[in-house]
Length: 159
Ligand code: NI
Image 1 (cartoon, rainbow, N blue to C red):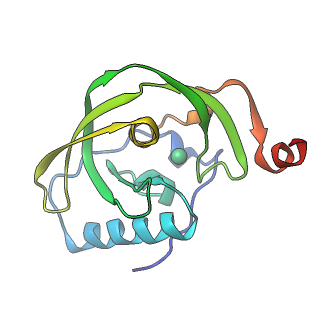
Image 2 (image 1 turned 60 degrees about the vertical axis):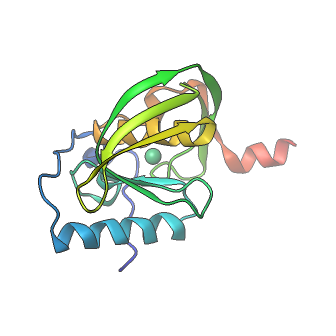
Image 3 (image 1 turned 60 degrees about the horizontal axis):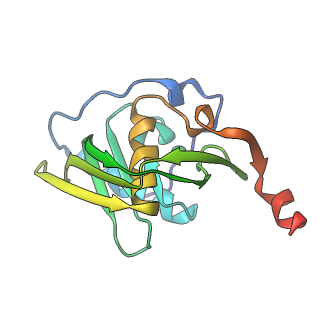
């Protein structure tokens, strides 16, 4: 497994619509392993394949550091409630912005064995699921920010 280069805002690969995964291959398994390594190394809670330059519908999420999920061909099938809070993205380093998301999300996806499963999440997990699924459709959170994108380093100085 290896750390991959994370593409940054402005790279057109981040605005493309990703293709579904039709079968698991050793190549795709290696990609998934690399995505986890890359996410953990960057201290992120989620990463989508286009962020490492691969236009496939795959994302990885781990909001606690001990609860890893791979979502292949994910489909959000139910949402409820609302949460408004700061969001960030490994492709937009040192920035954060306020985004409103559902407070509860139910998603259907395939695991690495291409078996369907259901994942339900609230709060940060719900936010991460929405954020990562958006990436697969070429949607960056920066298009959903309410107000200005803020620099996290200057925010710390203000406190
Ligand atoms: Ni992101």
